[in-house]
Length: 169
Image (cartoon, rainbow, N blue to C red):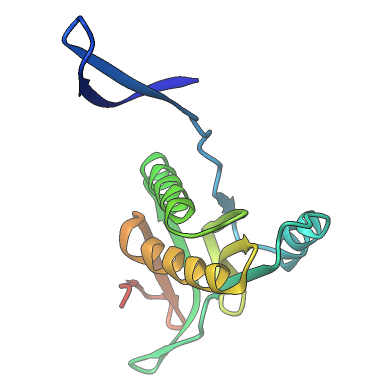
């Protein structure tokens, strides 16, 4: 348990009083998995939450690799890489920020590293809340934050054996 300085109040005989509050230090959760995310992992998340009676809604975003056609070449897979320590810290900040902004019971993020073929899952964001609105809004917030703030790089592997780096829009 850590203590966080909150504010300085004027007052007592010593001149000022320091106000502290306890700060929970949450462990940074591992987010990355090697290769595609199996659908069974999503089913496990749902199963793990079905006994929690304070949850009224879940929202799940499933990111899947598209077989886009670029200049006549088809994306066959994306090879994901990341600055893992930096990315895990960014995922943690996004998750904690979501808890501050929305009435969440829990949320999970899973992202692939390595090769993920077209049609396979590469990102899962799972949110749970007492009410659907918070589940919906927090899930969207987290997906957008991941796309803009997490240092993950996708190399699109094309049908002519060339590649290009993916850019998020």
